Length: 84
Image (cartoon, rainbow, N blue to C red):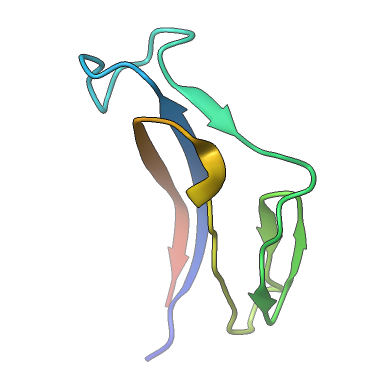
């Protein structure tokens, strides 16, 4: 069975060791969203770090944020909906 998912994924960085992964205080985690990001995509399109895959199709993307130069990074993934 195939499942369609709508996800919002946020990339963020910090240079502070003592910040919790769940900290929501402004300035503790800085969102990464460069307009010139190179995101290889299969079955969709990328604009900056935003990837769109048309509904009803399969797709994937690879994010490489190794050049960020920060102590820690996190991904925040929010599931908008799942359809079977």
